[in-house]
Amino acid sequence: MKTQRVGLFFVMVISLIGAGCAGQPQSPSSLSATVSLYGDLENLDPRGQVITVWYPASHEDALLAMLDRFNATNRWGIAVRGERLENSAALYERIQEGTSVKKLPDLAIVSPGYLAASATEGLAVELTPYLKSRQWGFPAGDLEEFFPSVLEVGQLSRPSGRYGFPFALSAGLLFYNRGWLRQLGYDHPPRTWEEFREMACAASDPTSGVYGYEFPASDRTFIHLLIGHGGRMMDTAGTEYTFGGQEGLGALTFLRDLVQNGCATREPRWEQAETDFGAGRVLFVLSSTWHIPHYRQVAAQRGGLDWAVAPLPTASGAPVTDLFGLLWFIPPTTPRRQLAAWLVVRWMNEQPQQDRWVSVYGYLPHRSLSSEAKAALLGEIPQYADALALLERDAVVEPAVPGYERCRDILGAMVSAVAEGEEPASRLQEAVESCQATLKGP
Image 1 (spheres, one colour):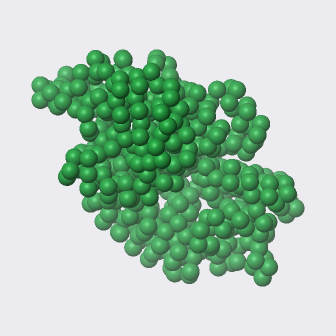
Image 2 (cartoon, one colour; image 1 turned 120 degrees about the vertical axis):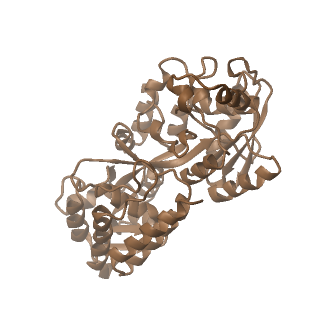
Image 3 (cartoon, helix red, strand yellow; image 1 turned 60 degrees about the vertical axis):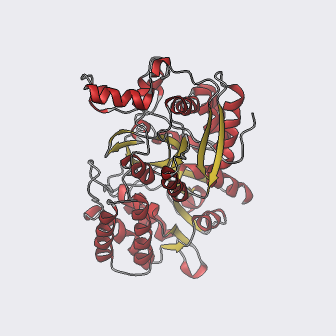
C-alpha cells in the first residue's frame, strides 16, 4: 500500500511505568487502569489495523519513504496513513483541538517541549509496557545495541516515565575549513574556547567580509556555547532553568566579545552561514550532525573544499555531546491501535531500518550500525566518523518540559540582543526569568 502524502510517526520506548514496572505489586485500581489503557497486551491482535501518523512537513520525504516499506512488508497487514502539518507547534495545537472531538492520531512526531506538554495533559501513553512485553518488545539483547545516550531521550521527569523515543536525532558539531586552518599554522581544530577565539580572530578580516565564526541568532547557538562552557539548561528534576549561572554568562560574554572584536558575525539564517562557509568566507560554523550532507554538497560545489568536523570546543578541552531532535509518541486511542503504532516504532528501530535511516537520510543512529553499513557510510562521507563517536560519550539531552518551545524563542532573542551590543548579564537574567515562567504551560 502506498503511503499517503500526509504522514507517519515512529515511537520508541524504554522507561518505567511507575510502581508496577519497578517490581512492586499494583493496586487493583492501578491494575484496572493499566488493562483499560493497554488491553490484554500479550494476547492482542494488531492485524488489519489502519493507523494515522501526524508529522511536521520538514521530515516528510524521509518518513514516507520508510513507511511505504513498512506498509509493504509488515506481517500483520497494518496500514499506516499520514497527515502533514506545518511544524511541531501546529501539530500540538491540532492534537489539543482533537481531544474535544475524540480525533487523535495514532502516532505523532513533535519536539521535546510538546511531548512533555502532551504527556502532562494525558495525551501521551507511557511506553514501557510495550517495551517490556514478551510478545511485542525487542528480542533479547537488542537493547544492548542502543547507545546509552539515546535511551535518555524521551524520558520525562514530570510525569515520570518514557513517553517518547527519538525520531530524528542530531548532535552539536564544529565544522571547520581544514585547509585554511593549516594555512594559519594550526595542525588541529580548537579543543577549547580559548583556542577557538585565537583561531577565529587570526582568520578574520571584517573589511573583506571574512570571519572566523558565523552564527544565527538562535537558541541552538547559545546552547552549544552553554554546554561547551560546562553549563546546563535545567536541573535534573526539570523544575528550574539553571542556565543563568557563570557558565551561561561566560558563554554570552564570549560571543559578545567575538563580535565586538571583529572575529565573528551574525547572519539571520543558518543557510547563510553554510553558504559563506562553502565560499571560503568563514573558518568555523557550529551546526549539527544532520547538516553533514549539506556541507558535503557545498564543499563539492566549491571544487573540493578541504573541510572537516570535530566535537564542540569546551572549557576543559574534554568533548561533550549535545543531543537533540524530534520524538515519536503514541496518543491514547484503543489498545489495538496503540499496539499497531508501537510496532511501527519497533520496526523503525530494527537493525536494517536504522542502517538505512543513517546511510540514506543522514540522521544519527539509535543503535550500533552493522559493520557493512558503517563501512559504506564512512567510505562515502568520512566526516561521519566524528559524528558517530559523539554517541559513545555521555550526552547532555535537550530539556523535555512544558513550555520549552517558548523558552527557545526567548533564547534566540537574547542571542540577537547580545550580538547587537546589549549587556549580557541583564539579558541573561531576563531570559532565565522568562523561561521559568513558561514551565506553567506550552
